Image (cartoon, rainbow, N blue to C red):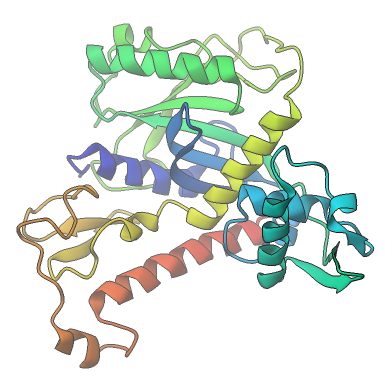
Length: 347
């Protein structure tokens, strides 16, 4: 059954996207993350469609996010040794911060550095690949009522106008019932609508496209007449600015490093009441005391029911690294790595 909280629904949508992306155009290699965006807009679910060969080259840079400062260094690092100020474009902020980023990049083995004539020089170890093909934003609303439709319409209109994403979707729960057409008409025509039924848990067949999205990329074209996706194409003129492309890459990097299973970082898996429960082909957090999927605010050290694992749980019958909470963390990390490997192997 679908969890009560919107947070729980969000996790199910993320897992569905891993299993069945793209819902209308067939399988595509993609990474899925949640709660990413910009200072102006944060998306519930983010799907990063990738080029598998380029993604494999990105994997050579490690499993951690390459943040914006490091990207400035790694993307522009020269093939031959050069003083960092000659090699890198002006960042728009003081060079001392670039120097710090050079040291950090070298410390993570992303580049090589050396000192010559009292100057810091750098060169790349490998070219940073162009691995991101498309970014898709999904808003999740399991119970779509009039007030929610109004708010989401404004948010999706912003996504359409900003064109930061290549597609925008609304995911809503139907549990076998028809979505109210009047509510769907509130959505911008460019946004796709995904009707989900997770009553039997997450399955690749649990989603149905109720409205096909338009291509929001500059110069792109997309169908705008709904369920058949066979309407006239509408061209979007222009191109994205370098600043926008950099912002898109920063979002993709955060998605790569974070994924959607990182909820354990903001919750308390070390509580004896914390569990993972299966919802079809997905695992979601569950509080044995509240008997529900908790939110990060509920699952915290300030919860009246919080009960930390006793020390003997961490030393008897469990790996020395920790007790059940550490086991949950390792399990989720392995699942994230498995999905990365699936993208590598995509054919």
